[in-house]
Length: 314
Image (cartoon, rainbow, N blue to C red; front, side, top):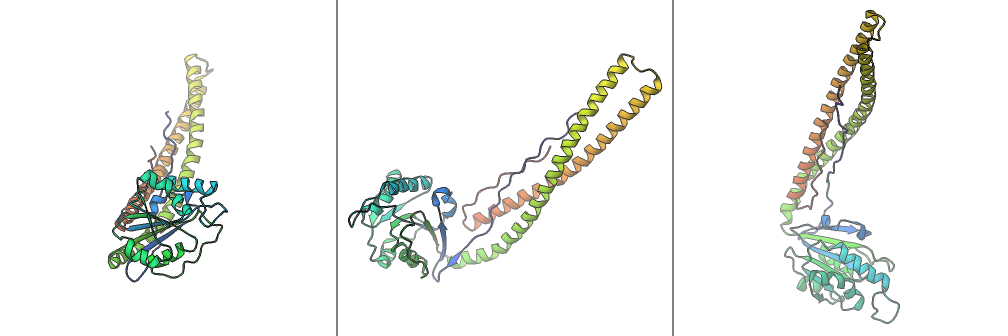
């Protein structure tokens, strides 16, 4: 008898759900990314939106009215460039201070951009007259007290407050969409579908996990028993070839016992195959859900990650 099954490996990633904020004029999707250096930031940047990545300057030296970045601030600036190295950036804006310009210095150097200076005391004019809402991707370096004003102005809200003095590591990503009505309608239509997909996915994930545990357990015991039976068959054949049986009845008894064990193993093989078929059917359905989710994500302008396919058991 041969080994009948290979180990089953389960790996599946699904993307579900969106969080949207709305203004009266445009649809605005605002993402707050804490500890941003540990995140894949591209998934928050929507391709068909005008994107504003708003950062506070890094840590500064404690001298003068216009200090440079400290060593910690310089390291943070390097981390920001690394964070956005694979992101499209069309424009870079900064207030006219050493610390804000130096925060984006590594990034603009890598992207071969020039920093555009804006006046932090005229945020409304800056948003109205200088920012272009044309699906461009923009980095804006500001301050703890001006970035909230900028967020409120772009998003047409009033709830962003001053950033604590000791907090430097947060990134705000604002995706601004035109055609608000169309996008809102699309979101509302698809949200219920996402919810249904997520619920079904959760159910199937639990079922496939349980089936995998059963398959692993049954396979382990099957392979142990198969090895033992094969050893017994080898011993039986050796005794038979060496004419070591004292009587024909002893020979027949051992032969019948082995045939019974082989028959039982064959039945267990069939049972395990049935469970494997159930597992594969459910993983196929999970993959269809994952692909459906990915299609929905793309259709509402999400940077979705395609799911890894679940390998079938063989």
